Amino acid sequence: MRRAERSAEALLRAQMADPHCAWSLGSYGAVATFRRDAEEAVRHLDDGRIGLATNRGALALTAPPGLRPIAYETGFTGGWSQVVALCLTEAACAMGRRTVLTELGADPAAVRPQDRSGILFDLGLDLGAVDACVRVTEPDLIERLRGATGRPLFVPGNPALPALMAASPHRVFLARPGRIEVYTAIPAPGQAGDPGPHSHILPKLLRLRLTHAATAPIPAGWVPVAALHPAHPVQAATGRPLSFDVGRHAAFGRLLDAWGDPDLVALRCAVLAGEEPDPAAVNGRFARLAIRAAREQRSLMAA
Image 1: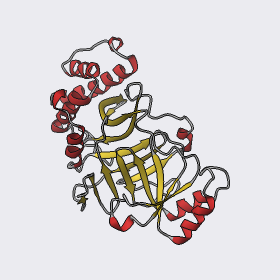
Image 2: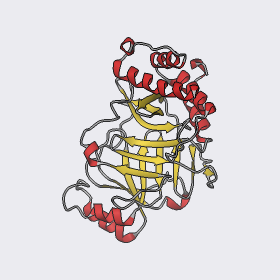
Image 3: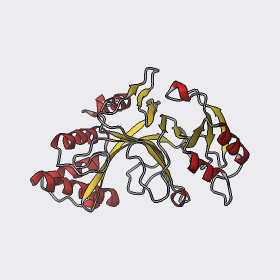
């Protein structure tokens, strides 16, 4: 794919059609993830948004002006991750930035019509580019949350947190490009959650006040607000290992050509061709991670 032919909307639509692509929306320490099974029943949206719904969750996106996909790979011991971050400028990505539990009212933009009368509550996590919310329909829980509005969620003794954990209302994460809705139950501490749509909120990471991991090569002034995780060559979306898939490997290579940092892509190509480039030639950290990922791939290609 030549860079002149890039289209963020076309990228979203193409990946939406692939059941092996996973999606995430959030910030460092608070993320909602959408996955579906290949055989799972889905309903595609017909309201102009790019998305779909299952019985476990939903995804609805648009490609707002200025949306910048950034594709990259991160190598680690025994493997690598691959991501296309969906980024906006710091000025363009701003959301509510509420710091206390706040009632927002009904949710007319809910993906499923039956959910639009539910009441949204912003959890008040003070995230710059994401509103992390719950959507509640049970009258008792609505009243309990209303009694806790105006307070930080994680303040000691706040009754809202155990009430939410017990009731597992829909989690609704909102950003400028759209939303992910999670309908699955919140797992009890120490239990594994649903491998499909799920969310997590980690207060220790939230306190770091980061927009993304330091291993992500996001240019200064840009903020990743969502991401797509295309089909991985050696790992299913659930984490199950797979035999090396040449087609998936080539497909992400095309995404890197279109949306990746040209210097990092050049390093990857050199390593796959059998060369050993100097990571000091470009940004050291990101170059080392890209080279490490390419080495893992080269070893599998040669097997």
